[in-house]
Length: 214
Length: 79
Image (cartoon, rainbow over all chains, first blue to last red; front, side, top):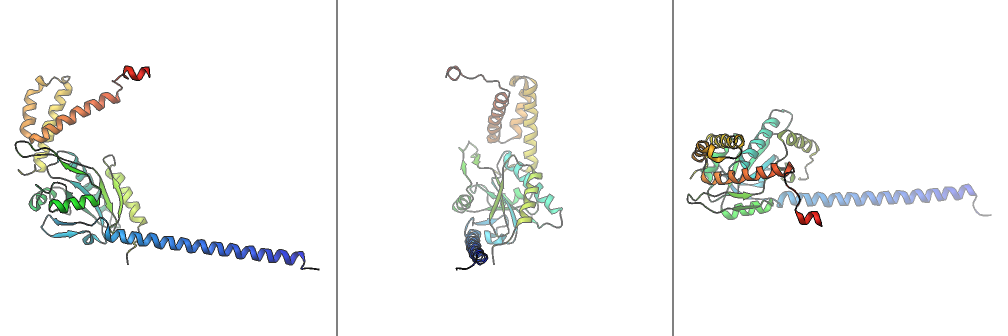
């Protein structure tokens, strides 16, 4: 007579458990591999994507690596902007001030990048940014450098026709971008988001943040 | 030509707001708001005046549209 019923059930159970364990182990290994792939992709994005080579409003060269370790709020506009840029910058600066008032949160670095390099030189940027916040950093550069930065952040801009004063309006996309301390694009805030909503969103991002960089 | 300072910008916005309020109060009769129009034109760069005039046209259109002030076109109704 063959093995008893009890023995056969035991063997079947052990075999099933073994299969289950093997499957769970394989799944965990795959998930770990996937997470490593994602971390590596994020690491490469952190280092390689969204870089720029611009001058700040004191004439110092700046690139993305200079902001490593900082949360950054970034806006693309121009100093001759009639209303949307100053409104959005004022909102951005309100967010910065509200976050500054919370001692347990890291400082957020506000950055304004011009889409009008023809007129917005270092001196023009310095005049403009100082009226918003002492820590608002203005960035400008050559036409090519600004175009490169804008392409990297998918920012559209186009200068309109000049009038007899050589004045013109630059049409451009409107968004405030949030970069995390690794330099990764993390979120964006459009016209309809209030300063309070943005503060709440950033607070959540700060709480959830884990660096992928060594 | 330097960009307007914050003070100049706010003066421009203030003059624009006074002019627009006058238009609102006078059923868009610009003739009755000539003095404020002149003040607006003296306070803002020319390009901004063009921009704000277009913006007002847009805002008025949006207001009317949202109030359902437009009737569907004949071809739409018949289709």
